[in-house]
Image (cartoon, rainbow, N blue to C red; front, side, top):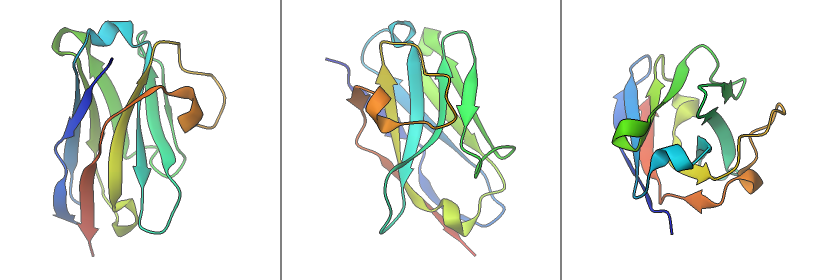
Length: 126
């Protein structure tokens, strides 16, 4: 069983930055696809970004140019660097992982991920 634990959430003002981290209980290199999702109040959970072990990454259009996903297999940790934060980025952010390579389509789909963390809250005030 893979356990994922998120950290780094908090409250920031618009324009600020945060870095989220997700630590895996197993060898992160075995998780060929890892990603970040978020759920805003009253909305469905949506894919934010995902990354393969070769470094190939996908981003939701809403975060392109502002968020950067990265993975440190030596530390079994996935990161999400978030810059130029907006109030609409306010959400609970979830880490996810799967043994299979990330799909290549345009949509980051939660159905492609088997393992999930419990989430960390990010609040951006205007």
